[in-house]
Length: 108
Image 1: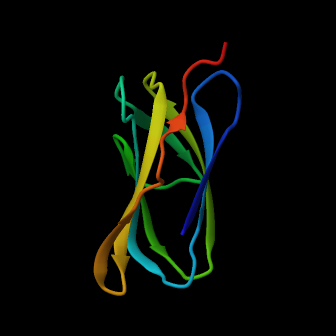
Image 2: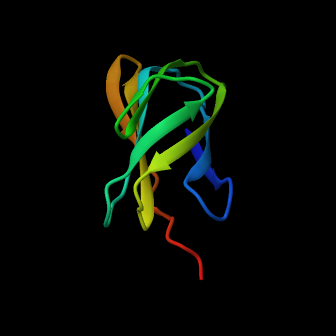
């Protein structure tokens, strides 16, 4: 599993989220966006359209070898962002989390 995030503009709260699935498909997958430190973060829009609530996007099933790109608009003013992908892999619950948070604070 690879998760990549790009900030779309220097100002504002828009980002592009890329997910690449390796050999194993993920069923009932969901991505949570959270602020490990400081202010709470929420999702205000997702494009292309996906179900989302508060800080979680519901991705459904992700087949092996697939790529998904989503544009997100966030609410709140976090200084850093964390991501957590969860779902079923091989019928077992699994979560994937990058090993560090993304610095999201205002650049000087």
